[in-house]
Amino acid sequence: MTTATLRQLGRLGGKGLLHGGWIGAVLAAAILAGICIGETAIPPETVLKTLANRLFGAGFVLDRIDQGIVWNYRLTRAIIAACCGASLAVAGVILQSLLRNALAEPYLLGISAGASTGAVLVTVAGLGAGAVSMSAGALAGALSAFLLVALLSRASGGGTGPRAAGQIVLAGIAGSQLFNALTAFIITRSASAEQARGIMFWLLGNLSGARWDNVAAAVPVALAVTLVCLWQARSLDAFTFGVDSALSLGVPVRRLQALLILAAALATAVMVSIVGSVGFVGLVVPHAARFLVGVRHSRLVPASALMGALFLIAADVVSRIAVPGQVLPIGVVTALVGAPVFAVILIRRRPAR
Amino acid sequence: MLECQQLGWSTRGQSILRAVDLRVRQGETLGLIGPNGSGKSTLMRLLAGVLTPSAGAVRLEGRDLASLRRREIAQAMALVEQQAETADRITVRDAVELGRTPWLSALRPWGAEDDAIVRSALEVVEMSGFAERDWLTLSGGERQRVHIARALAQRPRILLLDIHHQLGILQLVARLLVTTVIALHDLNQAMGCDRLGVLHQGQLVALGTPAEILTPSLLRDVFGVRATFLTDPADGSRIIRFHPLS
Image: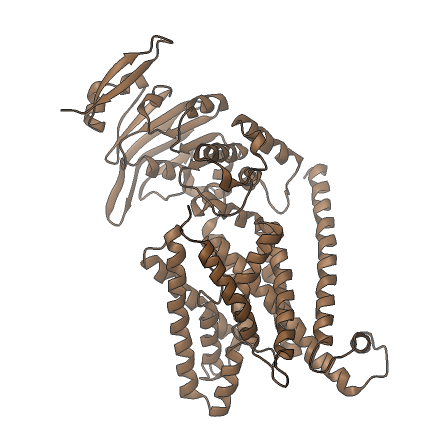
């Protein structure tokens, strides 16, 4: 390795640290805001003192209830929201690049629905007799849903051309409907009335159940999917002119597709099993990010991850304060933003010129 | 450099290409001609390793393509395809920079050398002034030039061209000093190649110099046209005119 290369690598590492630094600061500020704002507003000072007590044993005297709300309720909620937003946004970037389709995202392609079915099969129907975790069930469900949708769109004459753009979304609708029906069927068959109500609420996207053990699963997954995608940013760029072009530029297309679709499915599955299916994040955020930083993945991936995290923290705050005395499912908030954006993209993608 | 033996490709039980034997020589410009649907594009894609042969094999500098890594193939060979399009908002420079993909990795980041290669590739196709232009604002011919610049940025030893707007393309290729295989759609352009291969119904039916290949009888049999040859008084070059057979 030449010194010039080393110098370039050094510069790259320095840039990574710099950007990582300010991204971390922005995220921390957003999480802090997410903790402070709520039905009972908590002053930032209390929040910071709680964090100091918990993290460094600072020993500030605080109200026990406030401290509990901050540490066990709102902080976990905000962290999970950030992880979920980042993961779903990056999963959206992956699917849009690999499928060359502006409308691809985990929710619309039925991957979230498949993950829900898998999770419900494990928790409610007791599949795997306790040996299989809910996330593993969700992953299996997510992958089967993607496989089904991919096969269906291929059988209906899809490929990567402009016609395929419509086909895969239609296949996604069919897949979502099928898996949502399966989920409803399993719930009605196996769950008690009380359980069913809880699950239905969770399916719409709900952060109320976020606890520290969920954080331990969500943070590594969100970081991993973002870093893997960032590592392959150049290969994803090579898909600009389609799959053939990527092949002729030396990208091992099949291996990359397998790796990244697995990553997207894993991220979706883990987030669905914690939060439920939150729609449209994977659609809205990457498009907004492209608008701001362009289409190159070395910028698009980190921008999408950050904006996804911020979007979901904000959506969570809105879901808690929009209706006094009630918490809206977070999926309702994202869909209220996402559905109009979907419509705009659909209109703008009329048969090109 | 690049050769294939008994190369064949079929899809859904239909044979598109059969038993093609071809050897591309170092430094030459080899033109592939043939009517629409004769298998030119399929042969180009097989040679580039984008398609996997159903029979026979392609060998690059003595080694079977199937045994090479994608990256190694892309460092030796670049393919320019007609239908490569995008709806992304990229600039001309972005498009050409993609050509450096096979040379870059996590341990070999983008550097000044890559900038220089991209700049010179744009110069060769006379698109330097367009570097910051939006891809979507380019004409068909301009997009094609950018695709060729992208292929040149790969620094390939062999260039495979399958493109339509071909005015002046051979003069451009002649300047590149790279071994080139080009699918031709205009027979008058074919005169400028070193050798020509003729594809007809999925088979390579003739291979030779333009003078050997472009004969009235072959043009009648393969293309179904009656050809007359004229000589341009300005420079003595031959021009083919086509008439219906009857």
